[in-house]
Image 1 (cartoon, rainbow, N blue to C red):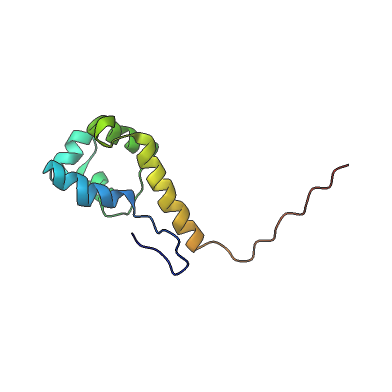
Image 2: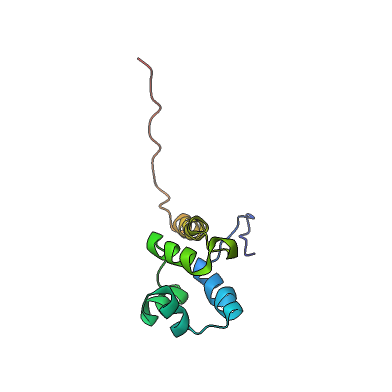
Amino acid sequence: MPRTESGMFNPPHPAAILREDVLPALNLTVTEAAAQLGITRVTLSRLLNERGGITPEMALRIEQWLGVERGGRADLWLGMQLDYDLWQARKHAPKAVRRAPAVVAA
């Protein structure tokens, strides 16, 4: 797993798992997988090429497609997307944010 010099985990885009593990294991083309998911080939291709993320709707489609018992839980796919997005945001986070003042009890 990729890590930074500080040892922090750099999560993969969840589409990489679809592209590199799921589609080959199912022996499916992008066109076939898109049809099974009920989306266009262009939509799936955009996701697989990491130009888009796993939305709640897509996570539910993956859950129905793979089934919970085969790793399709929607919350897991959304969690992977959140981990990826948060990692990316932290890499580009503004450095000059001032902390909020402490709250003084009255």
